[in-house]
Amino acid sequence: MSLSDYQEIRDMVSKFADSEVAPLAHDIDHNQQIPASLISKLAENGFLGSYIPEEFGGAGMDYTSYSLIVEEISRACASTGVLVSAHTSLCVWPVLAFGTEEQKKKYLPKLASGELIGCFCLSEPNAGSDAGSLTTFAEDKGDHYEITGMKNWITNGREAGLAIVFAKTTKTPNYKGISAFIVETASEGFNVIKIEDKLGIKGSSTAQIALDKIKVPKENLLGGYEKGFRVAMATLDGGRIGIASQALGIAEAAFRYARQYVTERVQFGAPLANLQGIQFILADMSTKIAASRLLIYEASRLKDLDENYTKASAQAKLFAAEAAMWIATKAVQLCGGNGYTKEYPVERYFRDAKITEIYEGTSEVQRIVIAAQELKEVK
Ligand code: CAA
Image 1 (spheres, rainbow, N blue to C red):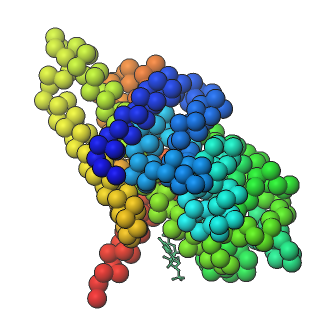
Image 2 (image 1 turned 30 degrees about the vertical axis):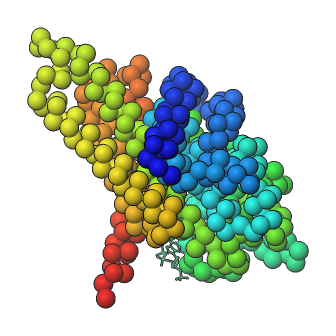
């Protein structure tokens, strides 16, 4: 795809984000819910199946286009941005990358149309960063598996119709023995027991899910028996680009708002923007945004070329998340007392930015991944 193709996609999503998403963002945050009508519009515009091939009902775009979509939607509303990101990176992608032909035919068209929203059930109360220590168990019952366990912090848990569930098929203390399964959430025993009340991205549902002897057909094993940790790690490599794009969208929104504000806010007889101290902050915000964007494009480009992008995606997420948090904090500061109130959107950007340093691997986990990749280069 050419640069002008990407520009066209950005313009199209940007218009959608400004007209259909941004006007709802305050209420989505306040009501802690994304309206079903907005999710339908995301699907109608192809944003839920952006890189699903056309033969499976998707828009047939590439990963770079998907990153642009998440960025632009997150600029308008970070909760809606992560609904798209978790659905696409964490559910669509593993089915596309590891699914059998039958699994793809059965599930991808429904994921593209929004009939099924996806989620990713890896984390557990005692298995967060140490994902390999999960204890959910899938017992072989002959013609099916029976899955029992507890899953935590599941984005889209309330809306999801399809879940990628990780469970041990052999009881081991580490990642060995983990298998991945495609699970329909309508299955008996799939119980959402809690929706978290969070600091930010309040419209995005974060669920605790109890899995109580769910029957999963053998053909829903994903990516091979006891190959689940590989499925999880490879999926998160791509997911991290999505979260970096979400962080970039939040950072861009916070920057644009603060930039406008300082040109209008008059103190000591002149707009704040006349002060060099304020200009230096704007310059640093702008530079961090530019650097985040380049890291995200590079990681997306490597993914589209099918080259190794483990380090690039971790770097993009680490940098973009920390940049977003810094920029959102400065945006509140530049807007002063006004910025601290709910009448101004910067306090929402500030609350929303924080999660990007936590989910799909904390900033500390990204550093572990980057350092491990660098040390592999030592001969
Ligand atoms: N791609 C494919 N395979 C990979 C891989 C990758 N990027 N990284 C590691 N692996 C494989 C390794 O090759 C190894 O397999 P073999 O033994 O067969 O060679 C295996 O995985 C174990 O690798 P490590 O020894 O590096 O694994 P570890 O146990 O030390 O863990 C870790 C490393 C980076 C800390 C990892 O556990 C991790 O990423 N933790 C964070 C988990 C995370 O991001 N959780 C978020 C969940 S999703 C979420 O946030 C909620 C949501 O809904 C959005």
